Amino acid sequence: MAEEKLEAGLDEMEEGLSENGTHQFMTFRSGTEYYGIELKYVNEIMGIQPITEIPEVEEYIKGLINLRGKIVPVIDVRIRFKQKPFEYNDRTCIIIVDVKNTVIGLIVETIADVVTIKDDDIEPPPALSPGKVKNKYVYGLGKTGDSVKLLLDPEKLIKDEDLKAIDEVIEDEEPAEK
Image (cartoon, rainbow, N blue to C red; front, side, top):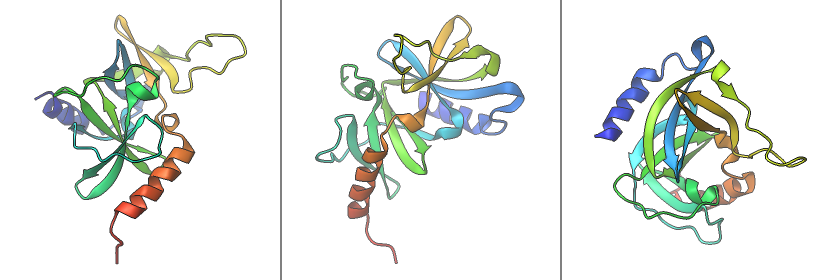
């Protein structure tokens, strides 16, 4: 039910992304925090699927799923953020995103909503300690009403070397096209 509502929302909001100084974000919960990914990266949302594990990859890369005949790598967002793993359930979703010309699934605890945030309501994250790199996944803090969403840069969620390793596995998995 919630999945259908969000997919309908995605369809309605696909037009007019980043119009009038605003951006639209798919928000989800991980642990106690709410995160957002700009809607332009989101292809679809689906329930949890059977996952084929990949040996010798980072722990956050949970494996591969078959998405209508296309092999798609999936990562667990909680593990990527160095949070405790969680048990997948009927609220667990996979957000299918297109990152660096690669389709990737993000396993999240639950989808929250699609929100529109004005450019003026997005601030850079604070540097938590002097001389240290700012949060490498969060590029901004989006204010929505009385809450703050941590806005993610999906291109930083997966390392280039991990993408290469996944691509090699996918090439081995997919039948040769003629």
